[in-house]
Image 1 (tube, rainbow, N blue to C red):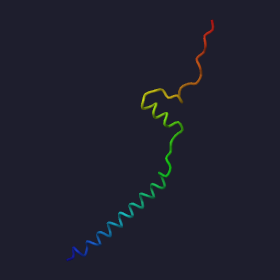
Image 2: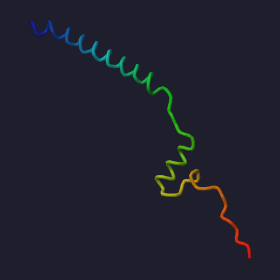
Image 3: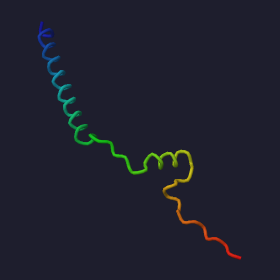
Image 4: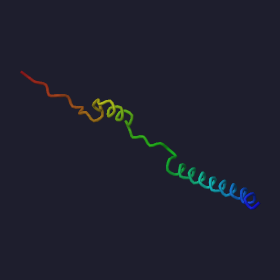
Length: 69
């Protein structure tokens, strides 16, 4: 008979613990993960890194010197 008395108490305690954990996870998400942080030209840099192509942002923009006769 004592096992049937403790069962609802156990359910209430587990539900309370789960609600507290859910509240903490939502608070952490709201504080640290509210906005995604993307660097400038991030998509281009990632594709250049993954595909092995030279990054156009990091290549020098100066033109090679022309030869004169």
